[in-house]
Image 1: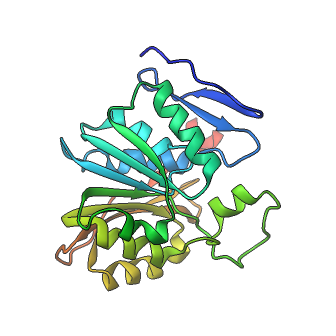
Image 2: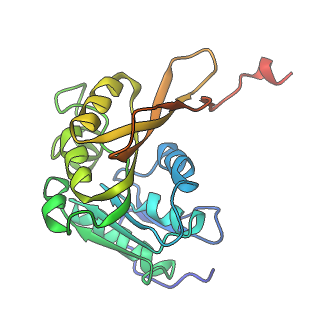
Image 3: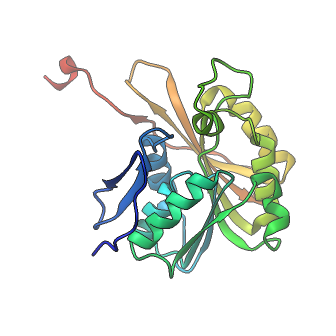
Length: 241
């Protein structure tokens, strides 16, 4: 893949995604993507059918839909974020990768997404939302990081309720979150008639508590939850001997 030249601004860099020539623009002073976005793209890639229309809520750098342009045969990706800087960076990444015919990035409040797009207009919604409630823990003085990490501008219920409006019947919601909020997540999904169908826990080490959970829900699905084998991120030196 040949990169198209795009402007870079202060504190920005271009990172190689190590996937068929894809690159992404990130701001070193903002919130750069982490392994959670990569994990979620792998968790959902086999469930996104050919020709699917996909919405990524709270896209940040655009990392999840950009990865999924190579990992799936979905026809089109729409990415939304409330932060103008994120939308600008993600838009330039789309242009840089030559993806303008398959993806666009829009400035949009998640709380208004259900009224911004036509009802039942997406087959799949992906989201890597803020994990922490607004008053949990110390807030970073860097506001973009606050918005990415804490439920300042939207919360879990906003994400799930708007997803329910936008998913077609049988459409799938994919989310990565923190295990300590699992009960809240399931409650919010069922309240909005999105049935939890599949989940997978992510552990840093095999003997440690899980640090992340990935969930797939289906709008109007029947009750039955499949638990995937856990992902263990790292091995200690003694385990490699």
